[in-house]
Length: 356
Image (cartoon, rainbow, N blue to C red; front, top):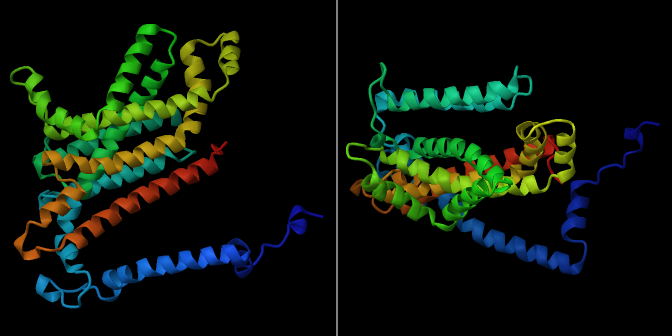
């Protein structure tokens, strides 16, 4: 008899609902109270966002149904996506996004030849090519970073700050575990300093004070300053996430590798770190999700990411009063990105059996 033949039949949906939510009178009462609360909250939102909403038209005068005026989002959609990027050059943003999606897909393709070397090389090429596409030069018209904005800037900050933060965080975690006191002290000071300073302060320091200490004639783009500040903060949190993974690896594995003749870097790179990163993946994903949301803080130094563009668009006298639509749309985009990252991380944990 096969295993499938003896596997118990899965209970029906109705039976599972009854057993999960209405098994006892107390459970049934709590479930009904929760359902009533959800309906009481969701129904007015549904009426505003869908039932009474206005989807067609070109101006505020077309919004007469009493619900949300999604005509505003439709009219400003290009600005929400690209900021003030010149419309004739937006194909470069689209191409950069396609290259990013392709690189992410290749990074997780297990059949990629020489994967350990190819993936870092792909990302290095992507960062250079995407920066060239977005900024211009070498045959492409220049587009100043002050014209960048909207969702493209949010993605840019998340990707570039994340790519800087992950390797730096790994090095800091290894440094904090080092047996050399100087390296351990430097790593600890870096981590504790950046973890202890609010991100808004870091962005202000990077954007306003850094030019004061730079040599005369040196000028770093304010977007780069904000990006580096974000990367340093996230690297400090990443380091603690990776350190947790390192501490979960039994010391006997390192001792066995040393007894086999492996050096520190071979032991760390081939045995310890791969296991530690798999264990740390949920925490690292949380830090990356936090990074995506924290990119909205750059608006305090007049860098217009998705949320900044939403706020700036409210200054248009033709669309005054569209606060709810602007914040609901930008919040929904942030939620979709973060929820997608969360589900993707969960899929990786399951497929690679990283849960313990």
